[in-house]
Length: 361
Ligand code: ATP
Image (tube, helix red, strand yellow):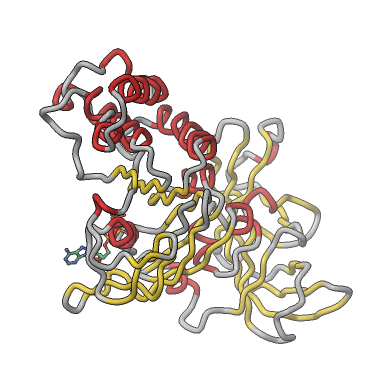
């Protein structure tokens, strides 16, 4: 049931604007991540939804009910927040069964719910321990089990996986999404990790400097980002500057600053205008003509190699080659690079330059 609606919500600390008038609706059973660089206002935003931080402006509606003045314990939410600890005097089991106990559920239900969620996060063998006896990652898992066991249909997570090592983090990502979907939860998950956001979300809300830059499915934000900041923040990309030399047959021909020419299947930028092309490394490939470049770095990525080549204009272009393409892996090798026209995206050149447009503030 829970739908969360933020209406012009904002928070100021003196002259610092932590969050600047955000409007957002998170639908029932939707899994939304709030993603953005450090200091962009993610934690402030989720804490306003929880009722831990009082907004300076705007309001939070949960199922249409104005939450102004309603404390966290009366908002019926499950939450995992970075510095909201487990109860230190309760065992792990009693921490996890806290929600059902507070709701006066029968003791057998409290025990079975607690076991179910401790089993899910693989902490059954530590259920009689106290939080102080667990390592950071285990505490985080116990907090997650407690939030899930609360029975609330709205789950708020602030960096819930950050204290875990990378292998467990990846496993738990899938678990988190699976559980949220299985239990029919509305989930709002804050992270600065774009891979985590991509792998768990129905929709990503990308923030920068207190404001929402763009929202969309992980695929939309990766393949057709509307904003150049998004293109750079989500995944890796090459940003190549040039201008529109010609428009024909549903294509724009872009003359690059670095001397090459690139075709892009997009025609909404006016002829002669300065533009920026965003193209992911997997859509740049060596060919017989195109941008002239020289290989400067080669990095082994597991199933492929990431090659960086510098163009005549000293611009670095990264591209990926399969491991068997070893003839491209020689430093100093000269080659020509082309771009898949369907996979490149064109933007008007930002007024204050590309650096400013992609800067993490
Ligand atoms: P991180 O990923 O590093 O936790 P974040 O995106 O969650 O960052 P917030 O913690 O929401 O960012 O902070 C947003 C901005 O508000 C930052 O510039 C921060 O310094 C400022 N800020 C947050 N809390 C306070 C406070 N209590 N007093 C003053 N400024 C604050």
